[in-house]
Length: 441
Image 1 (cartoon, rainbow, N blue to C red):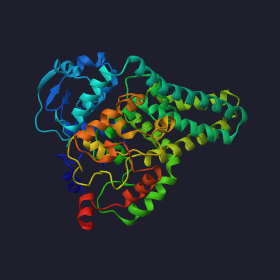
Image 2 (spheres, rainbow, N blue to C red):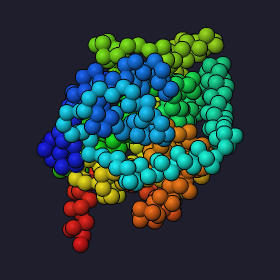
Image 3 (cartoon, one colour):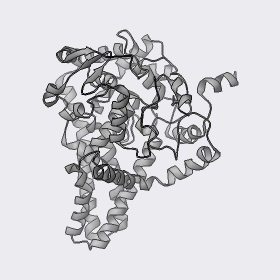
Image 4 (tube, one colour):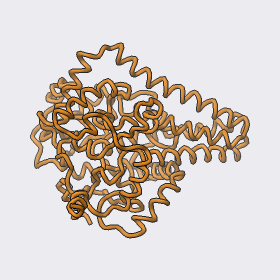
């Protein structure tokens, strides 16, 4: 099995990838084993000791603490636009790294991504005013804050009326809050990122499994969000059983209401075995339960309403996440053997991400259903409100690199239904794209 996937460009199959306990801590441990950086950090072909920089890191100490001992090349590049950051990095240089990187991605100075990044930085630094940036950011925070206010109102009304209808509505709004807060945990530490923790999830864990793993290595062997479904649902491309291909999709969709609870159980296990510590924000869901009771709702009824709120939110979150933007036979998945446009990291993202024409352009839908997804993947630490400002630069760069019209003209051929069907097709896919094309020719 492992040998089948090495063709995808990784030097070796990721350590601990198939461990039965799928957690952020386990992914970190596997990466440290594979990268072999000890107590240092690797960027490109060099090792750095950032220990003295952790406390003063502008993005917050957490990002560096969780990546010690890892190759952070991808995260370093997509997190920093300004070339000045390299000057800071060089202050902490230790020695050359031993051996080539495990990752298949490249960041050539004249390649697509580095060219795009340089142009975006120049545009934002010289063409976009501070007022324009602040206004773009304010649009996003207004949406998040209003959703939080609506949730609090519905939550209190649920307790006072003991209404399961209001509990269902609270769960839907909670899902919208969680998805909207996705914009904030990609950035430096801020209070809005903890809205993610309202739903039995952990912003700390998802910074690892989503921001570092999924965004750095989308749909590859190192993408935690690909391995997290396995062995029950397998989006990789290789020979699969009938059950994996055709029975699992229906189970996957219908059981999404359990997702939050399973994540909570995994967190309890990792805390119990000492892989991570209990964090204050982990207690927010229990605070919700306590408030239901303190607001006058009988305890047993409070527990039932609390379960309904989180089950509904979990179901909606799971459905939106699965059919959002990554699983369709047209997109690269581990087992396809090669990226369609080469190993440049930005082109790899274009190969594994899609936009949806019926979601983009509607701010609430973009923030809560992962719209404007290509630009978000290319620049995940940029505030979502900035993405439309840099779209002309993206289109210009796509034209210069002679990429397909889908990106050069920002006209996605996909709608939400296409990606719903695509999930089912991808779970059933057993042939790489190149083999499928050769047979059709």
